[in-house]
Amino acid sequence: MSSIFLPPPTQQIHSNIIESAGVEISVLRLDLMHPWVNGNKWYKLKYNLLEAKARNFTTLLTFGGAYSNHIFATAAAGKLFGLQTIGVIRGEETLPLNPTLSFALEQGMQLVYMNRTSYKQRNSPELQAELRERYGEVFIIPEGGCNLNGVLGCTEILQQAENFDIVCVACGTGTTFAGILLSLIPQQKGIAFPVLKNGEFLQQEIETLLQNYLAADLPVSNKSVCAWELICNYHFGGYAKVNDELLKFSQQFQQIYGIPLDYVYTAKMFYGVMDLLQQGFFSKGDRILLIHTGGLQGNLGIQQKTDKFKT
Ligand SMILES: Cc1ncc(COP(=O)(O)O)c(C=O)c1O
Image 1 (cartoon, rainbow, N blue to C red):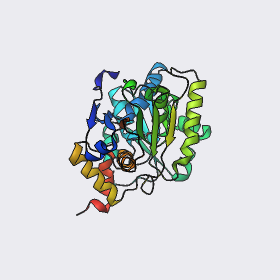
Image 2: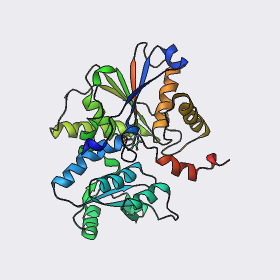
Image 3: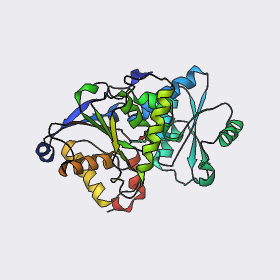
Image 4: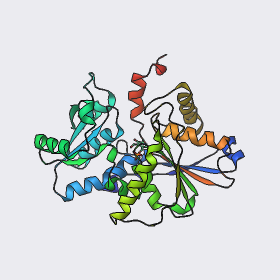
């Protein structure tokens, strides 16, 4: 199943800011694994797909917003691995469809729109029973792939854990970060950058994911989780919010390092790391690994709806 994916390269980046801080920065390019099912998405989907197949399900059903990377990747993964897909989309249908949903439809995903009040109940057994009544025996993957299968997949993101001291990742639900933490050794440290406003609540969510994972006795290289922290002040106004400074940063970053960033997740984390470097947050000699979690498909949609791109 994994054979269609390219091994993600690690790329060291250099600049005066990095050199004056006395640190080493490398980027793990999960965005380069596959054109559509890339980034953390593949890792969060992998064990969900395997479980669905092992239990003879033929259809996946999942949830997401209209620009969701998870919807995009689930539609493509379903097609690649021979499973039908249903995407329950938050809110009303807007025509013409944006690039994310057009792509999902082209991959054969059935799109179902749900009003925002009902959508809030997406994890409730009652709503899920209703969906099963309507769509038959579907394998339900939560929004963003946020379940223990998702965490398990993310424990496989880091292959060479010994080569760095600190790992940084953008954080939405915390699933990816939890998986990464479970694969680090106690001497290492994880830092997550929530991309939504008031992301402090993720502290508890991540602790719960870690506890549930360990209680479920799933594979783990180290039962004592290393030090970790959330840095919550690089959300730029909230989920999918961008401003001129962030846009300029992403454009310059791509020009200097040749690495494209998505505005919703990775740009905020990379901005945060570069800013913290200048504030002397890291110690001299730190080897820092930044995870590029993909999500570049979302830029098209953001560019369409944001006036800032219109010249
Ligand atoms: C590109 C990208 N980076 C980071 C994240 C954050 O992942 P998580 O929800 O597991 O915290 C997401 C959301 O899945 C994403 O699409």
